[in-house]
Amino acid sequence: MSVPLLDYRNVTVYRGERVALENITLSVAQGDHIAILGPNGSGKSTLIKTFTRECYPAPAAGSWLRILGQEAWDVTSLRSMLGIVTNDLVAACTDGMSSDFAENPRRVTGRHTVLSGFFSSIGLWAHHHVTPEMERKADEILDRFDVTHLADRQLDEVSSGEARRLVIGRALVHDPAALVLDEVANSLDLGANRELQDTVRRIAQAGTTVVMVTHHLPDIIPEIDRVILLHRGRIIEDGPKARVLVPETLSALFGARVDVTRRDGYYAAW
Image (cartoon, rainbow, N blue to C red; front, side, top):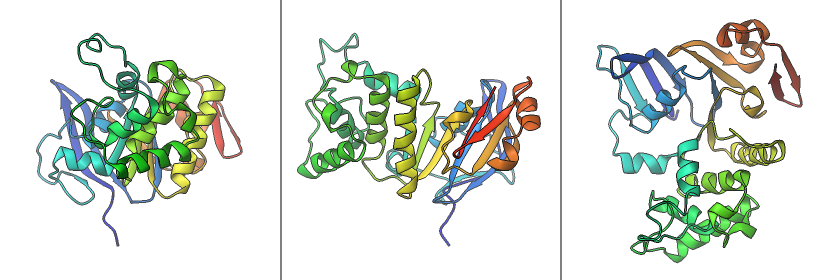
């Protein structure tokens, strides 16, 4: 049997003196698709930062945090195993005309954005050596996500939905074991959100594990069956979405009355 993608046992994380995650026990098998759902301030972003090794658990007996069976990781190697897309990353990638751009010009077209995933950079810089194999991989991803027409467009000239699809493509250049999406649908209109959902569905159907972090039920694609509810840094529910995404449980999670509907594998709440 393959080792779990994520294996957390009694993990507690502090941000300063505040407990951000408390006694988190979580196991995610390779090939599973999960959603982590919770209100703002519930600890979702801190949980993502434990994936990326930006936050470390407090040492304690009987506690561990393993990714693909390992507790110790070189961060560069880990980045090739987990494709992580956050709102902060999208903002950084789309800010091609930032304050340092005039002095340090970098290439930030759609193709260069995807290629930058090979270098863990924001856009391409003059010192980056792009190989023909990298070019082929980038073109394959552009075609796979139906964004070939954006290859030569500057990233600050494309729509928010198109930019997110390009940044997701950037995260997949190494064929990672999992794609982690942290609130990436924020601020998208209905059409762009549907295009993003279709992209993520194709990734899940192709066999890449999808870990989706959100506070919005309609973000959860039909391929995701397991939902973990996070509240005040603790897991309060973990199970099939048909059992977890019910009015009583969600009302308790968000502290307000929540009604739920389901259609074509998607859930909505109001």
